[in-house]
Image (cartoon, rainbow, N blue to C red):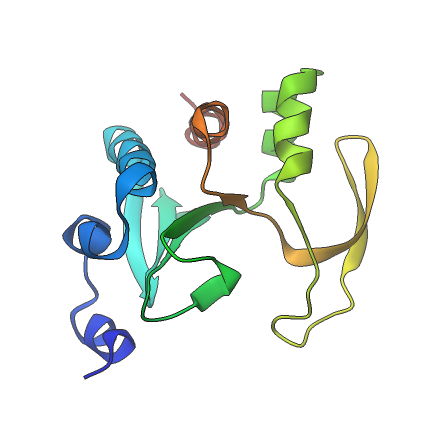
Length: 163
């Protein structure tokens, strides 16, 4: 049975499979964000192979995707994970608040259209006062976040849940 079919059948919790997908720094950082999510009463629900949606009070607020050696899914390299916020424009403005380091975190994580789902050619958008051309419809994706980006993700989630 394929991993996708197996996961579809059991709809695993992220903690039950994360150690079979990731290792080293990727595993450490995703476990940190999972612990933060659970501490803040945000639920993680399986969505598709190696993908979990984040919900708070019934509203979807983001997702975590991972890839492994068996499937190069979501245009992620091996041993990688990514966080993508949902409905993030208002949250970004509140969290960034004219902080240049925070702006650079956001700008460096804008995903450009690669026509991966045949939905191209992408969209031009203003991101924190900067025009970025041909962004993906899932335009903000924080791939293998470093410590500063992990802290930024936590700030975004705190803003989303009102903490």
